[in-house]
Length: 129
Image (cartoon, rainbow, N blue to C red; front, side):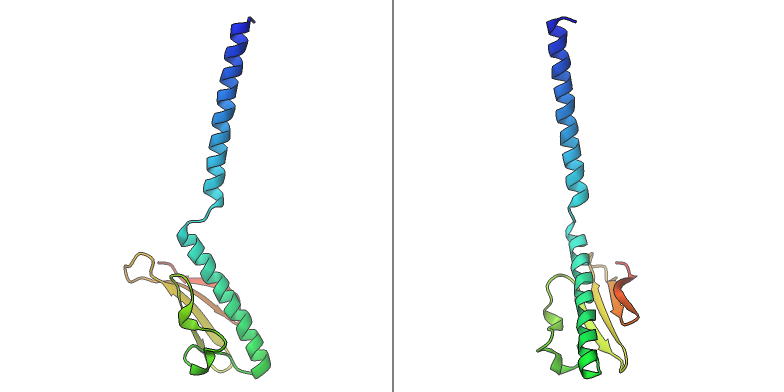
């Protein structure tokens, strides 16, 4: 090999490495960042998990569950003042409760609904939007 061939080989290798690095960086960014819709879902699941923990603690201390229908829950949790697109409703049924998060992302009247209750402490997707 002569000097010219060596320089061409180094240049081509450098270009290939730079292109590969850029592609890997873009793919890494794409698969590690969340869309706004994914962030909303994470927020809703986290909020429902928090509501579940609050319900367990409240039930352990008072023997009942909190409900968004009762007026006395505003000092514990503001159901209607949660951040994000999801709306939250918590219903108590004596010895159990149901916490629901729902949002209509595309405005077509169909709601995405997540739910948590004592039997299902991890949020469950009930209905997709």
